[in-house]
Length: 146
Image (cartoon, rainbow, N blue to C red; front, top):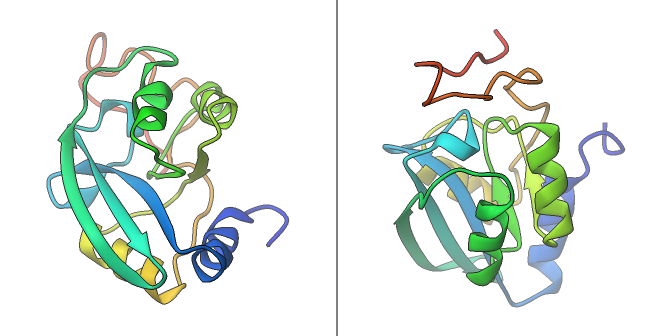
């Protein structure tokens, strides 16, 4: 399983080795958004060691290919956590040097606690290929895996 989903374990190791990092969580209300690009906001947390130093919520400035990775990179974000994300977006984040952790659900504060404890587990994206395409424009809902 580590070979398939190494990032959450990598994130835990990263926290132990480095003193400070920023993580963005795709957010819808108080919960992790199932589709990162159409989330209303991002919760950006700054962590030092195993302590939460700063937590801020920023509005999603808009969804078009390549913009959100750049937007978050400019804010020094190193990881993005979301329920789902397409392959193209995952590649664009990788190109920007931002790691993705997908398949995460639940209350944002619980996810932050799991990061701090080193127990956050990622998995497969909740979105099927093409499921987010047009969401918010042509569709009223993103079609997530059951």
